[in-house]
Length: 255
Image (cartoon, rainbow, N blue to C red; front, side, top):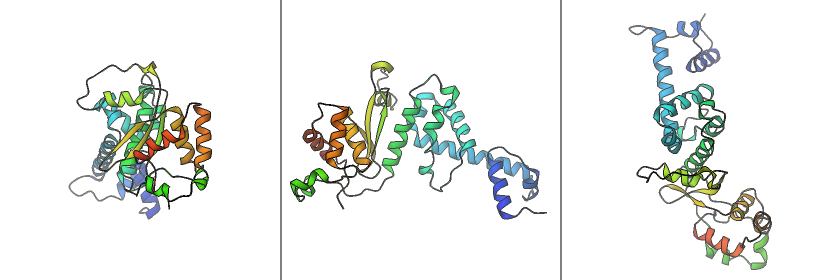
């Protein structure tokens, strides 16, 4: 008996990740190429396409571990996490967590954080080019009302923290880099990934700046975000920090 459509779809999805089923083979037309061979070709194509998509989204991770290692890691991820959306740039949200538990990468403790940075840059790059907050916008707000205002980060902007110097590791992994050795114990990094005019990049943050932006991203007011920043870094200066971040076009325009 032919498989009902929901059962056919479930069988096909299971086949892609390695579950060969005779009832699925029987539902596929063979002609010059046997049905089982057709399904194997399709499975190979899916794995190859998704691994290629992951290599595009996580170029720094691939550069750090090499093509062969990355392909094996990507295939293992694909086997357990098929896409749920048709846009491949949206595929890979769970890759960093997967890398964290991937045993063969155990000797590279910073690799999961590098994947988080790659993902943040990918999200930023594909985010809409929405209007940004400028000094003129703030000048229109009465000074006494500013502390209670909530300011949103620009679409796609996100703080990425690591106990490792992932900014220097990222730089060392770029094409044409000098090949300097990065000392992992040299200190952590706090970065803000954001969309730029025609690409995505990141800026380095102090402890207070990271806390300030994370509080704003959580919906807190400028006053409460400044309090959180001061708690993390007593020397935090709101005026200087806000001016620098405003010039970097980090904030979304007020609605």
